[in-house]
Length: 424
Image (cartoon, rainbow, N blue to C red):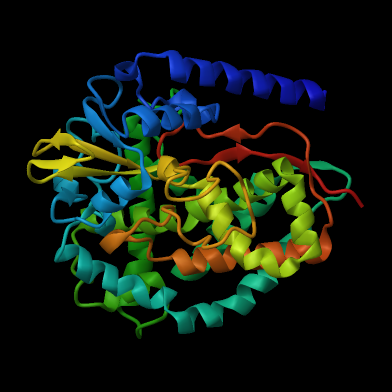
């Protein structure tokens, strides 16, 4: 059965590769959701990097937009926020446009300076080095408890029992959120990143808004408790007591909640799953890790590059400009495909190989660059490092028994299922 499983996956990849290199280039839309669901998008990115690295898609699911596919061009866009805006009023950070009549979520990642700078600064203390050092013991304790509770010689879903559980426990700690309700954080993260246009199984617009309003109501209750208490070290208390964030509009409050929940949940959780899958598919690398456990820290950066848990970020041009020999007009939608940049051989040698002892492994695009670089990147790395240190101590081998089930999304590059078995 496993042989057939691999054969069908190989056939799928071969068919996609042939199509990607035969299709007229103007017809390629790398944001096609099925490319991500089937994990075939890499072939289309390879073609674009070679033949049309700044590529215009004239029509389709997302309307006209530019795809930026090479590492250096992505860096240029990401670090020039004065030309390429992420502000919600210009269109925000995702390839999908907001439906007519639905207001954009006003989160600081979707703001330009100066508003961006003051709101980001309000939450930075929680991921300061001193606070990360304080969190390390708790993260390790919880990681050990989760791993020690896993079934042996039974098939189970790694996404649910490990990736979601660990990231949700961490999120609940950052928000000082009631642990018994922590499943709500996962649910709200999934709802916030869902899109009916991209995934027919996603909630409707009305259902999505209803759930986000429930989220806002829950957090408003926590906010009201903390704004009247002494300042605490959790995210809600930090925002409630900081002069730059305590008077946020309801839209800004909801937007920043979504940002912090998705940023703290989806990215780490999908790297926890993607790392196990990468080691399963590259057994020689797993052997390297077993023989030299000190490689964990470097491997974590390689996992984050390899997985690229957020496949893209979108910007909007504030003025006419040139990029990669193409004329970008004011108002154009520009999509930085981090996933493609992380496979660019010109910037990263052997970029299509998973190499856990890769030199300069932190030189990747997964956290972004410039003023919007992921505020929690060191926390994400620490969670993954502790997870793999503790896996190494316990399990010489974790068997992946079926192909993963991937999310149908060009934004969150994630999984809903990875069935595994841990032999005794």
